[in-house]
Length: 224
View (cartoon, rainbow, N blue to C red):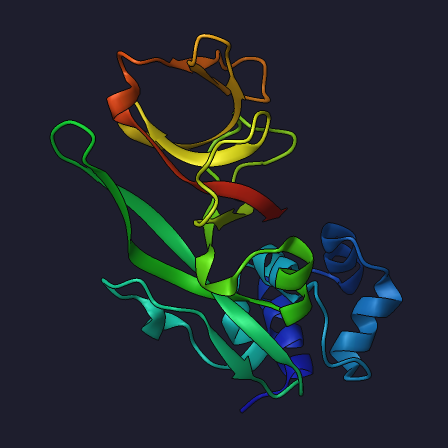
């Protein structure tokens, strides 16, 4: 199995990037990145961001193993993996959420495709007060929530937090599509689905169209 330093060098060479470009893109100092490529440091919380910038699989970059086997028709529980960098991470699925809609209030979401995994230290979940089995990661599409959430950003969703807190951001299904929106409660009981980008108008969920609305979970983490 290749080492982390070898995989970093290989990925950076294929991407045609310099060490300085990688460091600047992910927000670390150039010496800190050099320490990873030299082998002086063998772990970093920035590996997922580095993998995204170099357009390689985060799981492969961290462990040397492929994540192609993670595609499944079932929801897979996250697993704790001991890696060659001598640290324990909890690997969370990066999923593609799909929705099936029946009559009335029958709206279900499921994860047909798992597009890899991202590593998090156990302390992350303690700090965020989120159970690992309730976390899924989806990729944001479009610019309706920029500059807070940009197109292609990883977004962590807590599936256990579906009760709406005024002003929080949620992954929801509405008007036949999945979306990420800030939600505000109105005095009349309606909900405003707000886009942070002002060029996108608000959407209103009312008693009349509420059967076409479902909360997947609250957004509590992002990375891009």
